[in-house]
Image 1 (tube, rainbow, N blue to C red):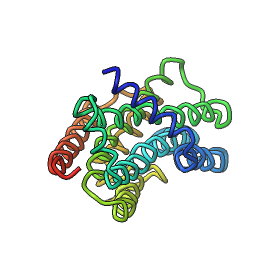
Image 2: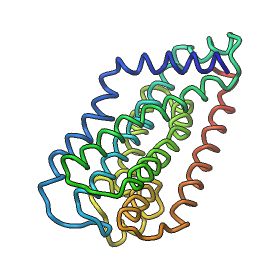
Image 3: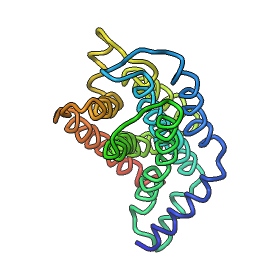
Image 4: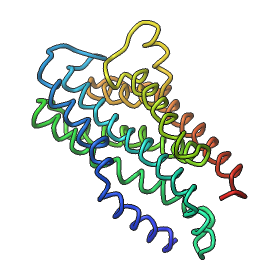
Length: 242
């Protein structure tokens, strides 16, 4: 376990020098929120647009950092033989995958915290004290389940293919999940089954003081199970080639 934690620390230190991570995970959602938070006076999912976009942009930043950055790095490190090198060390066989998941869990936090702070002090979102940690944890869990999908994609596809694959996944879950704008009609009904929508809807329900549907929470757990199965299958199928 000590070796896995040491590898995780090294990964985090390396990530702190990654400009792309900060652009897409922190700067991009923050910039969007600063533009739209005060520009439109309307509602979405029963809350003000400022509150809705606060949850949506925090989810977008965390989701983007978890999926896009990890999948690309895993694929590149697989190609360069880094995973094979780690298997020759005393580290546990699953240390690499566990490290990537732990790093994802840690790197989603800045985007969530910064956007929620902007919501409070810039967007004028005023909530009871207990709602802030509930919303933060919901976004965090809803986003970090994509760490498993990132492992699956990174192991399965080479570097020249992984970027377009992750971009397609990113746009599908971002748009259908209502992260860019709230959806209605057919697309809105389809989007209700995505983990990104479920995370946002739980957050808006909490703000309204409404009872959160058990189906939304169960949906997030089901998606975690699906992504985990895909990750395990991808790792096992390439175990002899990396």
